[in-house]
Length: 431
Image 1 (cartoon, rainbow, N blue to C red):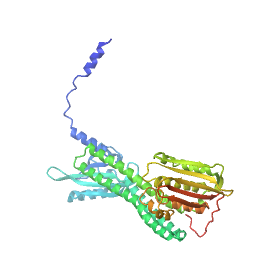
Image 2: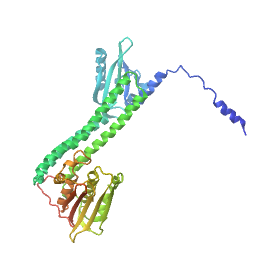
Image 3: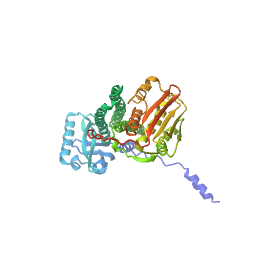
Image 4: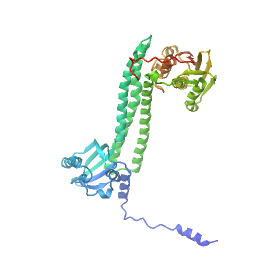
């Protein structure tokens, strides 16, 4: 056995040399933190020459922090842009007034494109309070502007959507359909403004956290914990924005679906049981994440000449309606989908559940858009309205329901094996 190795291991545990106190730890920590921040942080003297630059601004300029020292904006930007920056900074040096959160479109020197930059510049003072230069922070807000533009686009789509809804008014002028039109207008405002409002609130919160971070940077008080906190808030905030914008997009998608021209759907021959099973496969994961069951009893060999795409939407909407609304405050329940041949020309599709059922008041409005149970809950409030329109319109069938409070609900759909040919109204604008 080699005892020398044991001696070497013992030697490895000898006391380390003393800490080299010649290193300026505070400066190293500050520089490291500043370079960790994606913002563009820099300082200039009274002649607008760079005296400090972090990696963020250097990357934006297409150079290194060291190479920027002693240079001015004229060394990086076109003369016209550099002159504007110089004039603003010289006025700041004269007046002592800061420039706070100024937003502008600027060229991105790192990629040759343009983007949005939010800039804050403040006078830099010495111990006696004399202005010796400026310190600035620039943040790339191109992505935030993109989100704002997307939200504005959603509002434009809503305007277009309202025009499409007005075109469907003629279909609503039957019995209680005029009252349903009022529900559509109220539902649009409520259902679409809520996710957009949530997204705007999150963006405002993110902007506030940015200003807090900016203040810490200016005060040389930025800690790693502060930076991690802002990063965590930003990540969760972006997730909320994404989910709310996605909900708004889903709502717009469902609105558009109501105005789709029947001639745009693909007609084909298919087995009814196969189409139903394929449709339910897309929503089975939603049931598996709950304590509720989805069961089927499907008669095979029922061949149809119809529209499989819209039929799939009918099946999924009915099943999801049971999952979302049928089992409220229940810990278990069963949704059951079945199909059978009625005769040589018709087939039946049934979707039932043993859930909470519906009251008489709810039943009166079940096929109306944004009916009372849908508002404020999951879904867009258009599911059963869309189902009724597809079944009685494009598919040429009928739909009825039976419901008993506390016992459940059953939807009965009767479909012709051969769907009627859609009549194209030449005077009607295409969707």
